[in-house]
Image (tube, rainbow, N blue to C red; front, side, top):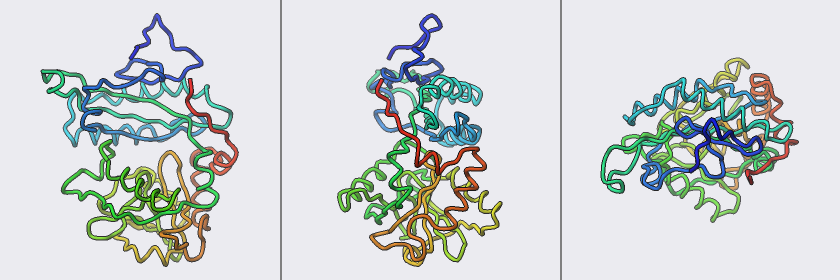
Length: 318
């Protein structure tokens, strides 16, 4: 891992990441093998995005990261100003490298420091990282147009009394296992997890919203405290659409008029089917989905549909 000092300026054509306040070439950035983020998955994270190069909801993401670090009693928590400054530096360097019309996915995370067994002592520095990636619109495009296919997983959400499910942390192997199971069952399918009581929880990357009689509902318990879900709630209030957080039984999915997923990077994705059963009135993009997509676009200052359908993605290959 090679730090870029003031005498060694970043290559303008190469993406960078920020690690503990230093800009690092994206191609060589990494964590030490002894870091607890690698050894134990002990890391708190945030995932956001830019809109036309602007990180509109940076304050909310940074505040949630800091609240999670404090709740989990991580050592040497970075300051808010330091996180915001590092994020802005990464955006200012990496955004100009994108193709026209594209935007950045933004990732922040902080680890719990080094593994004492590997190092032979307890005195080690946690790693605080900010990096970005080109938003993969081409990867999402089919789901946006035709809808996501979901299948209910046999793997359940970890109960809140065993794990801090409301916090966004790296240690979520059960999500990967659930998506792996779904893809093996039906290639291209994504997993929908249920809570231990059998109620609907969430997917590995998104909150789920169910529309019935022009009312939007999302699960209330044992799910991530989702910022995108909060934004959907705000957009519903502005549009006069009733919104509620409550227990959702899987049987309700079969009677839903619409179902959609929401996350900070992809914003809104419609659901085509759950276990091969299509939503009742509007499989894929329904009227509530369309209205919220328009409202989100106005709030962000970006035509999200046009961006999703027309923007070419660029993988990081430097």
